[in-house]
Length: 420
Image (cartoon, rainbow, N blue to C red; front, top):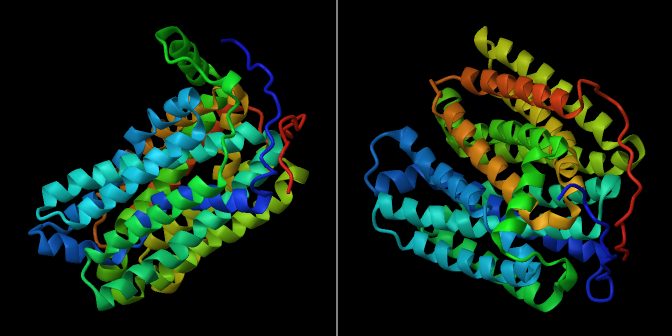
């Protein structure tokens, strides 16, 4: 499999319009973030009620779920290349609902972590939405669609912690998992009623060893696929590290744990706002230029934040301002790097989404856990960890681009077939 054969146009505008498709794809992917961000205010309560004595161990409620997401992405996309996108999504969403309810019924910390892992596996089925986008788009237009979905996706971190805290004011923490199950059920119904199949039968891949080997070889040997995926991995790791320790930062550094959801929302909103800007400019300026400018800004801001933290000048204001600015840069990078990783994978979009998603999520979870475990009562581990990850991302992009930065990305626009 040395080249990507052309794909017949796919049109689903007769059943679902452009705006609804973007919203549905984004909200499917938001299943993953909802089950993390809405429960952040409950982490300490859950660990205390289940007998956990080390406060850092509460991070495993988040990190185990992330590990499940990484593992699950190994097979959901592959199955969607064989059986179609729609049935795989419906299966994953059904498992998401069941696992969420079983997490809420867990009586011990170990059992809870087991079901959280399975919940993450189920949530990772949302990676199929990425394959559906690739079924319909490529090039700068695909980057625009990815950015638009990212905007909707970022609304979950903005509002989810506050929703979680409101739930905890009137109900026990187990009610949060009823909420996650209800969300998954709504998404299942929406997909069932409105979302048609986007993969033509003639493009379905036979699940035999030869075809799988050819597809995997294509994904892991294509330079754009490998190095852009690694760049996404380390940038998302910085976000995961922040998510893992944000509650402790507001509790132990600033001594204001109750305002964590609000400040978390401010930081997440900056990422969503920049994603919107990216969607507006990427078709005109190009993915490479926009994403690489964002990467240099990310490195510069994390360097400044590291100096502020190291010199003891950190305050809640400086933290929120610098973290918001840093996270806004992510809105210029992730959708564009991800698009450049997926673009050569048109005929094997499901396998590519699986492998790239596995590497991205699992790698980011492990690196994020490493950053999170360095928490020492200050913000310095987060700032310096993010700086180092930004530098690694730059090295990845230098390899992906053959050492040449800021060269425009050219795309024929083929595959941009969906209108509405």
